[in-house]
Amino acid sequence: MDTPHSLVFLIYPGFQLLDLTGPLAMFSAANHAAGRPLYDIRVAAPQAGPVASSSGLPVIAGDSASDAAARLGPASTVIVAGGEAPGVRAALDVPDVQAFIDTAFDRAGRVASVCSGTFLLARWGRLDGCRVTTHWRSAARLQRYYPALEVQPDAIFIRDGKVWTSAGVTAGIDLALALIETDHDRDLALAVARENVVYRMRSGGQAQFSADLAAQGADDRRLARLAEAVRAAPERDWSVTAMCDTLAVSPRTLSRLCRREMTTSPAAFIERVRIDLARCLLVETRQRIDMVAQACGFGTHQRMDRAFMRQLGVTPSDYRARFTSPLKEEA
Image (cartoon, rainbow, N blue to C red; front, top):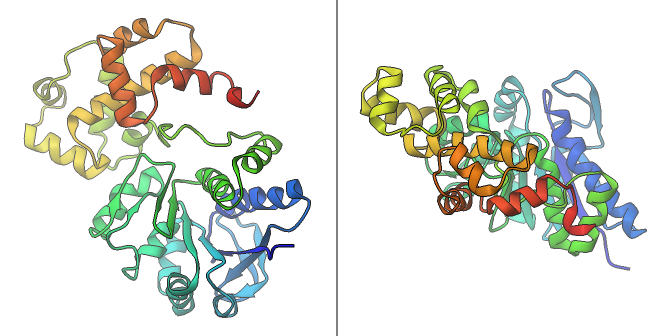
């Protein structure tokens, strides 16, 4: 019988509970589906014992970070959970957390993070030059804090060499399923997904957030106003001039605003809002794709196809097929 793959989750006071329990449940389900222990799952923290999550519910860490680090090897995968900002900031100053992450990069076969756990991996320069992602609300801040990273805010998860990073909260489930498929096969990942009533893999183009949500979460409310205006009249020619007139700002200010708050360009922001509208129509109505394209301001379905592929990595027809019928491809 093959030796189980060593899997270590790192948590700390204030960690996000679902960042731990979501992926952990997938790996546990893989063990159950296989009928044998494919993964040896352990939870570590700066000190072993109860660790309070951001919701207040404690989780028992069976290992201290130093003990867990001593057992890491090429067959190990480390997953660092995200957390609320105060918890992450406090963890950045814990020597045992730094030592554990350094050892993970040096010894483990894979190093991964969920949500704001990417901040912990990036803190000591071990992610410099890597393509990474994190929670959509934190993507711009991650890029500002660590300019040597290539932050991709739209991704559900990203693999760059031995480093895997995922977006916010439930994206950790997508990450876990991808790791299971990489370690074993698609059938096992599918069995785990079915058992847990989730997609085996959200379409590679299923953006983790809508432009509207991102704009609402931005520090500067002007982008939320712009998104509202575009939703009200998506067919309008939303040139830079039109956007500037709507917000009463200069083109330079508009460009800075989009880059700072959304890590994107004004044109790409408009495209995202239109895609959000199209996604809703594709899933919630049976309108023909060419009619959806016209209603959302793309003009032709070919232009909408190109926009979907550019932003989401999937065509509108494939998006509709996947998201109007969960697990349709496996039925």
